Structures are given as C-alpha cells and as structure tokens.
Image (cartoon, rainbow, N blue to C red; front, side):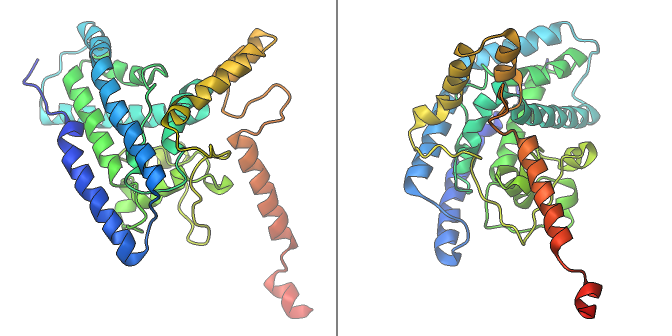
Length: 310
C-alpha cells in the first residue's frame, strides 16, 4: 500500500462555497440561472448531513473494498497507467451505478433526493442522499479492488468525480464546443436533471460523456426545448426529512399492500413508476407516449411541397 491520497471532497469544500457565491452574483447581474432561498437551504442541509453520514459509514465502505482487495487477482502498483485505468474503471462503474439508480426503484429511493429540486444551480449539486449505503451504491467499485486497484486509489477517483460534477450544475455556462464530445458538461447534465419526456433517463456520465455515447443513453440539449427541472411528480416541500425519506416510505406502503412476491419485487426492484395495474407511468412509458405525439404531430404538419401546391 502506498502513501494516503487526499480526500478531494473535503479539500474542495471552500471552493464550493466560493463558486456558489459567484454564481449567485452572476445570476443577479445576468439573470442567468435561478436561486430560491428555501430550496437552497434544503440542499445545503442535505449536503451537510450527507457529509456526516459519509464519515460515520466510511469505515464500512473502506472495509468492504479492503476485503475485496485482500482477494485481489493482480498486484497493481501506482504507475501512471494504473492511475489512468483506475480513473476509467471508476468512471465506468459510476455510469452503471447512476444508470441503475434511475432504472431500479430501490436505488432510486436514495438517488431521487438529488433530483428533487426544481432549480438547477450549484447548490443543487450539494443536495445529496442520506441513504446511499442502504441503496448499495458502494458495491459498484468493489470489482476494481478485486482486480487489484488500491481501495484508497478507487476512493480518490470517486471523490474526484464528485468534485468534477459540482461545477456542471449550472445554467451560467451554456455550451463548451468540442469539450462536449468527450466530457460531461453543464449542457449534458441539465438534460439529466430535466423531467421533459424528451430528456428522461439520459446522460448518466460522471466525468466522461463517452459512456453515454457508447451505450446509447446520450441526449443532446435542444435549445428549442429548455429543460424543466425536478421530478415527474414534484414533492412540493422543502422539509429535508421528507426529501430524504419520501420514496422509502412510498416503497414501504406499496410493499405492505402487495399480494404476491412478484408485486413485492416489482415495487422494490422494478423501474420507478411500476405498478401492478399499470396505473402509474414509468419513464419508458412517458418517453414512448412522447414519441407517439411527436410522430403524430409530424404527420399532421404539411410538407413544403404540399404547402406550395395548396
């Protein structure tokens, strides 16, 4: 084991505060982006408690990675190429965690917290879950430790990814040219936070947007359709306790009313919005309905030739 690597999240906290202040100033000067006092206060509360829970559960997460590392397949050092492979591996693991956190309700119950704000600014980046360990988020990087990457290296890149993702929660920056092809940017992440049917369940990247392009989940921001932020069914509350636990309570209510193992599994590990009678709508259903409306609208619009001949 090599020397300890820095905790990037803790080191970045002063920069977070400075950047939030600068964004508020930019919003007031240019009217680009929005802040709402109660919403920002809720986000900050979620972030502070998340930090404390992270300290309390850190030993469990590190211990799980140390156990996997003890049974490692390869002995990897700290060569530059090992760091590069660890970065790519962690970023790929984050993509799949993030994607499944939208596709499986048990994991969504934790991740929904981050999407519950109807605003999109740097304070929204701090609206973090209190139940990430319960949703098993940490298991996605265990294979990296089993391969032989040091746990401290894996957790270093996990922290670096969180720090990177902070600055992309903004409307101040519009587009970034060729940078958009490779890296996650504010434009890409605005799509991810939108509940417009066009944008649902897209752009899961941490640092590299290449994974979304590779796995078919990339959607570009359309200037003609600005993102609308929040949930398909918004909470209507700034209470941190309700924000943190509302979906877990809903899962418990659905499981209590279930009449079979199939229903229990559907309400816990099915997609968010799954129901026994189809009365609720999943993202897949909402996107399919949107596509049908788009096709119907395109069929009704006259073509250039038909307009000229009429």
